Structures are given as C-alpha cells and as structure tokens.
Length: 198
Image (tube, rainbow, N blue to C red; front, side):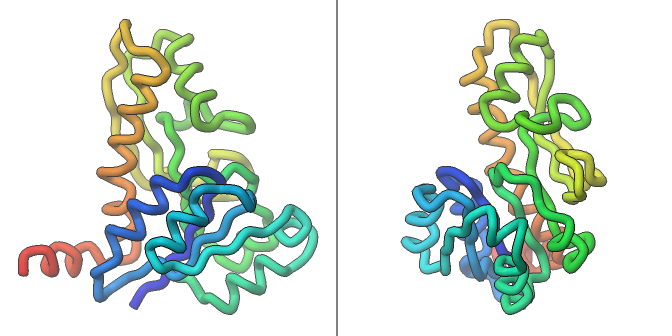
C-alpha cells in the first residue's frame, strides 16, 4: 500500500478530493494531512473523512526537525502539496528526493514564483489578457514553482471571464486531473482502473 501525506494551507477542497479518490483503493491511501494554519478548514475535512490531521508552526517546519521527524515516522511514498503556501525547506526535500509534488493554478513558467497563488494568479491571468491558462503539477525544489514539470493541462480564457470564472475553470481541472496524476506517479493507476471496473 502506497502512503501519501498531504500539505495544505486553506479550505482543503483538493485534499478532500484526493482523500475520497483513494478512500476505497487497495493500492494507495492518504495517511495524514498537515497544515501550517491551525484554523484551516482542511483540518475539519480530513477529520471528517477519518484521516489524521495536524497543524505545525514555522519553527517546527523550517528551524527544527519536528516536521521532518513526523514525516520520517510516516514514511510517505509521496508528499503532495495541495494549496500549501509556504516554501518547502531544503532539509526536508533532501530526505525525500523526487517525492514532493505541487499543483500550481497556471501554466508554469507563467505566473509562478513567490506570492503567486490562488486569486493572485487568476487576477494576473485576466489582467494579462491571456487566452488560455491551466494547471501545472510539478516536483518541488528549493525555489518557488521551478521544479520539473510532471503534467500540464489547459483551458480557454474568454475575454468576458472574470478572475472568479478563471478560478472555477482551474478548480474543475484540479478536481479531474490531480488525483489521476498522483495515482500514475505512484504506479497505482492500472490498479485504480481495474478496481473501478469491478
């Protein structure tokens, strides 16, 4: 059974989608949700779905080995950042090479970097008169949004679209593709498909 740990900072709709996707799987499961925000709705979502959920502070994450030791004891096969806003520290990345991935709500390298998350991205897309945007799933390295790209998919941006319209389109792409890409990365995709056919 492959083990997945999710990091999130906000409401946790992506986290909930991932938990539900793998809930009845024999090949992978979400074993823990971690957040830097003690008031994040993702904590409630995870607990409601029966997944262990904890919050941590910046010192535990960046200055000490508290979060690293927690991850070491969990032994995840994959660490998934789903709306997680802090930069991932190098000492954790070193222990989990090519095992930390993130979903970004734009077509990187466009609209990436520090401060580019959520509605900031969608506002920039609209202000820039982009005709398309999308999601990028990528490995995490020591720089914001610069790790190797794993997967991208696009959607059209209409001249009449507001940032909220763009956000809705991106949300739809995340819901549809993020769990499938995670499954494929873990090599559980074929098993998922065969399970669903039963």
